[in-house]
Length: 231
Image (tube, rainbow, N blue to C red; front, side, top):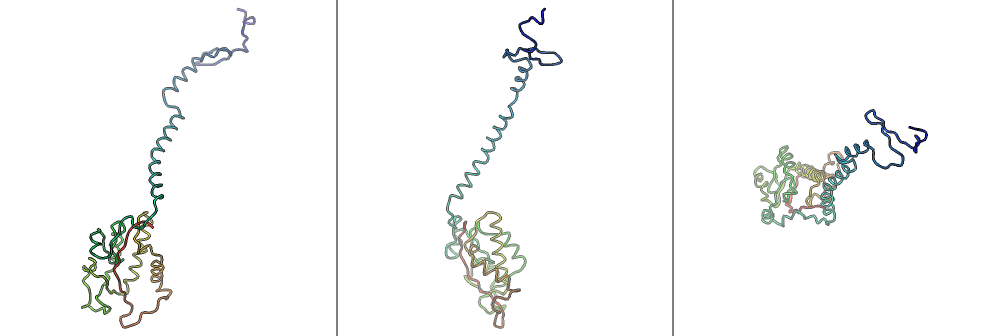
């Protein structure tokens, strides 16, 4: 054979190796080599990286889309502050509405705004004594169960009631904030927070007028009926 007289020169040939054998294809021939065919066959057995990426993205969208819609719906709604209902204006309506009384707030609250664990923790640290009048005598003391049942619209209490009440209110506000939960209208009042801050700092700053009278500082508590929701 005349290698130099063939129609194709060696320069017009492409060479490839597979399993130690030399494969020859012409530069003008578009027919896939056996190597390319095997590669394509292997690639068709499994999804490509692009396909896997598309599947992963679709799965992520399917998970996140409902969450984003739910969050958007919540932000689109205007907060009323009473999303979880109210306790009415008296003990009868509060009980009928399923509200719960706690002595540290001295208020009725909806279950969603009732901080049972926090309340129990502070109650266990000190039992506040309540009285029918400003005369804090043993015979004037109100049975504690009557207080817990919310049977007294108002009562008098010892001095420590005030700072304990304030510590509880600020702790409720913090707990609701951390959990993304609702709050009652009483704990949301900015003036009340400022007042409680002053009470808690008074042992050091002495900004509150000194208590007068033989019994020293006493507190009068008045029952509140709150509503519960987002501010």
